[in-house]
Length: 180
Ligand SMILES: CC(C)(COP(=O)(O)OP(=O)(O)OC[C@H]1O[C@@H](n2cnc3c(N)ncnc32)[C@H](O)[C@@H]1OP(=O)(O)O)[C@@H](O)C(=O)NCCC(=O)NCCS
Image (tube, rainbow, N blue to C red; front, side, top):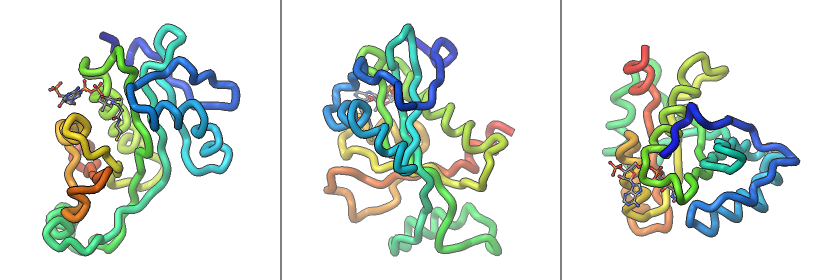
């Protein structure tokens, strides 16, 4: 088992060696190996690595995003109820976790949860811009959905129930209240 305290936190750069990573998901492994640097160059996503003993223990990629009214009344009304009336809009500032993975040998040990706690803190305490929600397109697999649910994420849509991925959101206000 490892924790974040024992990891070095590194922003992916041109010389980063990402070959050691394996989270047991081919798409995510390939993204880190082949694509993450291109996303960085194009200013489309920034990837961060958690390094433990010269090996990547986990990573995530972030992009600016927005949470839009999706037409699903029940879910949207529930979400808006948390926001004071005069501040309610049809669009809210958000950050998108485009990819996220934990090395297979560190999975099920709470490391993914620590990563998520770190992210929640990062986008609430002294954040440079207003950011109310974290968004993720979660793989529609029970293991992944239960990871996000346990970390406080909720479904944004009903209609993506059978899709490959499901949109989930986390309201950062919940975190800022608990951590103030
Ligand atoms: C999803 C992932 C990031 C979770 O990281 P992790 O370090 O294993 O997560 P944690 O140990 O903090 O687990 C938290 C919860 O996730 C769920 N979970 C994690 N691994 C699971 C598994 N193999 N089976 C069932 N549930 C699992 C459980 O609900 C767990 O809660 P519990 O510890 O009370 O049982 C990691 O499994 C991973 O990298 N998977 C492959 C890549 C991937 O699917 N990424 C998500 C893309 S959307």
